[in-house]
Image (tube, rainbow over all chains, first blue to last red; front, side, top):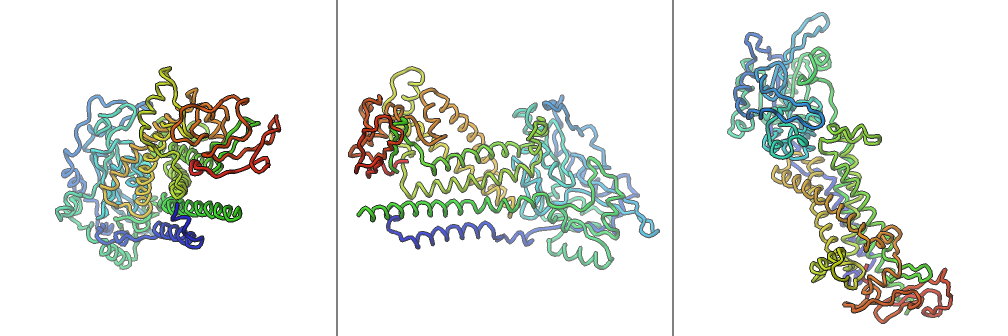
Amino acid sequence: MKTVLNMNRRGFLKMAGAVAAIGTAGALSVPRTSEAGEGKIATLIDLTRCNGCTDRATPACVSACKKIKAGRLPEPVDPIPLPFPTRKIEDWSKKKDVSNRLTPYNLIYIQKADVDIGGDKKTVFIPRRCMHCDNPACATLCPFAANHKFENGAVVIDPDVCFGGAKCKTVCPWEIPQRQSGIGVYLKVLPTFMGNGVMVKCDLCSDLLKGGKPPACIEVCPQKAMTIGPRKEIYAKAEALAMKIGGYLYGKRENGGTSTLYVSPVPFDRLDAAIRKGPGEPALGAVKRQMAGTDTMGKAVLAAPAIGIAAGVAGAFALVSKRKDRIKKEG
Amino acid sequence: MSISIDEGKNRIVRHGSLELAEHWALALSGLALLLSGLFELPVAARYKIIAIPGLAWSGDFIASLTIHYAASVVFIVAAFFHLFYHGLLNDRGLIPQKGDLKASIAVIKTFFGRGEEPPFDKYLPEQRLAYFGMAAIFAIIIITGLIKTYKNVYAPDLSYTLVFWSTWLHNIFFVFFILAFVGHIGAIILKPNRPMVRGILTGAVRLDYARHRHPLWLSGADTGTSAPPASAADTAALVETDAVVVEVSLVGESGGSSVSPGGDATGTVETNKEKQR
């Protein structure tokens, strides 16, 4: 109180202004080096090389992924609790061999696109899995922090924390995460009323990456169609390749940018029109980052403490000043 | 702040317009935060809340996040304003005092017919404790919410440990927030507390109620032994003690014969209650 009384009006307003300015500047600046790509990795998927492993029963990348992830998920409880009120479960545990779409047991698959470019018929094979977006809503909006983007760029779901509510799938523009009901922590809480299993997707073989090894799908590709490395290098390589073949990039701007860059000799809208799409079969169209529309309001939230402090300090000063004036007038 | 009494209307001002604005900014934005926060869980589509007229947005996580952010701006500005404004003015009326816990238990017992209420200051001891509890809940929710927002806007790859604990503390204190809200509403439903409802809606409460239940507020004494007279006949239009500043409005008073300082209808005297909100 004494401090307030002893401070002159200009000093007080300066202080309030400074608090607001510092807070607002802090909220609006982007000081993180990781945003610039340092320490991050990315993957280049060269569609001129991928041949879909048509000579094999199952593409090499798909087999390697299945093999390394086998046994990762526990067997679901029997019977699987029916969620109220939908009574809908998703059980892929009896269909683990499915390899022509994404499932909780099949985290990568090959899409096939037959296109006709000016009379030139082409078949393009497209390995599909999580894009590991730069600002993934699936992770940032997870209400239990079960899904997180790590500094290296990998977006990973922790099966021990996930409740299987499928919010990540809803907010993913490609609806990549797939649900296995009857497993996970929700069984120990309120299995009928809350959650419905565990969401599963590619984790970029984070365990292998920690050990300095590439993801299984990349390592086994006989065509060397996939390359992983430092983000800046991969981006430069992808852009150079696209330039060289007069091709197209996908994943650089989609959903605000991703850690996966596809290079194709065929425009992606043509591929999107040619591929089969549906549950577990993601599209290849242009995708805007949905959360971009909330960023401005988010910045306002970050500036709110400074605004509140400035208003509080200014208001207290104004009241004290008014009281002092009154005392002066009253002699 | 001086105490404003209107004898004619049997009214005493309990909250100024600024305090009412602070309370309702926090209360209404807090309710919007509770609702939009709830819809950040994947419940709206599952439980068909989206089918309720006016709640179609509840199944859209981006829409509910936008509402959550907008309400957060109001909530955080109001909370920080409250903290700094009243902190700098040294308003201590709602700060818990020694013995509040014991006194609160005694007061709660009186709600069940056991014992008699002691004379109160402007705020009841359990109100001071509840204020402290609410402030702690707000602080945790605001801090963790700011971390989560920073993560959403700038740093999705923020430390997982920080994100994990921020998220879970936000969720746990979200539940405490709901419980505190239910407790708050429950407290004002209790019959002895009902006269205070008018105070938070209009700013003023009944003067006879204040004299009967909050004599320490009116007397300015640190410890009270008995309440001032509750009947209108026993009270003059202007209540002035050496400890209290009262500003009396005689507008509308039936008797019209009361005396006020300086011969005016209203008057103000400095008191040691000035700091109490």
